[in-house]
Amino acid sequence: MKKIAIIGAGPAGIEAASILAAHNFEVTLFEKSSTPLSNILDKAFLFPSSVAAADLVDELNAKLLHDNIQLICEKEIVNIKETNDECKLFDKDGKTYFASKVLITTGYTIFDAHRKEELGYGIYKGVISSLDLEKMIRHKQIKNSIDELPQRITFLQCVGSRDEKSGNNYCSKICCVTAVKQAIEARKLLPQAEIYIFYMDLRMWGQTFEELYRQSQEEYDIRYIRGRISEASATFDGKVQIKSEDTLIGQPLKMTTDLLVLMCGMEPSPGTKTLAENCQIAGDYHFIQTIDPHLHDNETAQTGIYVAGSAKRPMSIRDTLSDAAAAAMQIMSDCQ
Ligand SMILES: Cc1cc2nc3c(=O)[nH]c(=O)nc-3n(C[C@H](O)[C@H](O)[C@H](O)COP(=O)(O)OP(=O)(O)OC[C@H]3O[C@@H](n4cnc5c(N)ncnc54)[C@H](O)[C@@H]3O)c2cc1C
Ligand code: SF4
Picture 1 (cartoon, rainbow, N blue to C red):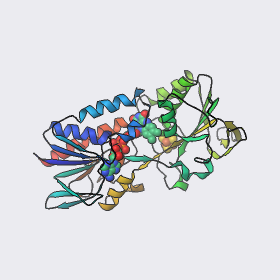
Picture 2 (picture 1 turned 90 degrees about the horizontal axis):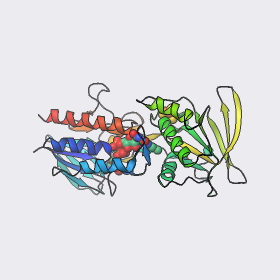
Picture 3 (picture 1 turned 30 degrees about the horizontal axis):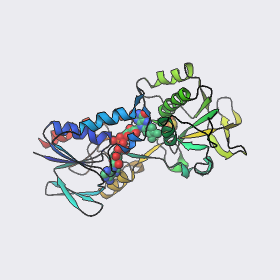
Picture 4 (picture 1 turned 45 degrees about the vertical axis):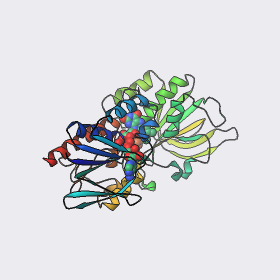
């Protein structure tokens, strides 16, 4: 039986592991955290269907219950070397493991909003990240900086993406629809609140996303303003004052809000960056580079090393799962 190592037990790693195991490959799945799916467990509901993240976690975890899959948690892999037609993996304590082929599925991390000091994250309690809001929605408790129900919530798109200053010129692809999803969930919890989304462009690129955006306006009264917020500061009563420009009417704008939600983009996870660098397969912005975006989009320049999911670029769960299936097929075909 051929041995395959997969690094990272997110949606991509689990999907690929289950397909390979079903086809009689012996899979070892290495996960850095104490449990799989850390980047799904911290979400409330998932676009496009509003399914509870916990339900998807259960379904994906069930896929791991296969005799051909060995899951090893709290194991961080930091390097891979090819020797005599075999791949040698190194964990961070210097221990080694062998496999015929290795699939990297080490995923993403959310942009650290502290890096945008002018927006006040970590300085003013009323400024939160999209991930902080996911937690509040999960616990069904959205509160402002003085623990009261917010009367106005304002979302700001493109934080740490499409932004030369933070070094990330790319679009993170999922944050426009994430804002729509979160605004709808916020409305369900706060029927009286005013909810605004400040955007540069709205990129509703996925199936049913445009409809969700429309629904957010027509059924949930979410209001959209085309403009960028340049600065946030606190007011004496615990609110956040924002300075912006409405770029559709060309007017500067000042307003106060109870919560400013920063829609942070996706960056390669530290694990992705380390493996990209150590295996010499780093592409733009330290995501992992594939050989070709059309016909060889799961193969890397190193023989025996493959990649799937958000370790190579920002992607949704649906795209991640399809990409993982493609990677598993490629590995099976290359093992014949
Ligand atoms: C705020 C927010 C909301 C979102 N909401 C949605 C949504 O509603 N719907 C949707 O489709 N998508 C959503 N997403 C995107 C979704 O989280 C990703 O599409 C998905 O998690 C990508 O899966 P992945 O397997 O590629 O990577 P990840 O989920 O990042 O999994 C990677 C795994 O690899 C592990 N790992 C990392 N380095 C190492 C290492 N060196 N050794 C071993 N293990 C390692 C990590 O611990 C992690 O478990 C959202 C993202 C954000 C930021
Ligand atoms: S998906 Fe939307 S919010 Fe995210 S970077 Fe792209 S345009 Fe900006």
